[in-house]
Image (cartoon, rainbow, N blue to C red):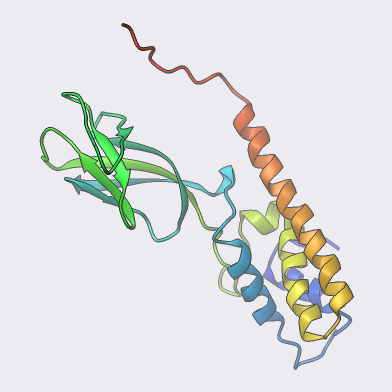
Length: 196
């Protein structure tokens, strides 16, 4: 059985847990609980986003759906990460460090500029109104095993719950491996050398 959307996932969970047609079986809750477990941690190239933030002076606030940052550009400068304790920058350089829910910028002047942030976004939640996303389309086992962990816990089937935890770990490993394979490909990153 192929699983590529919310309804197909619901049917699969019901069949795997042998609860077809049971109206008391809270499948939607199992899906939501599974997503709450893995959505804040999955970093994958399919979930990357680019956001341009206007009128930045000294602080870039992280987007609400950000899991992890990838790159930052302020105006036409790629900033350098600095220590929050002893920050120092050269003229025309921009420094930054994480402070709370964003990056604190250190610049020569604080005229408003645009900042561009590339980041890993959390996987969009599934629902009847949003029946699919890139994760279920490419890695449906993550959703199935994640939800079945909670289904078997609800059914008091400890052995099946443990097996699904192993299956989820394997599925998340495939997501991670796919992301690493994509990052290994392409041209080498060339950085400007330091001349002494």
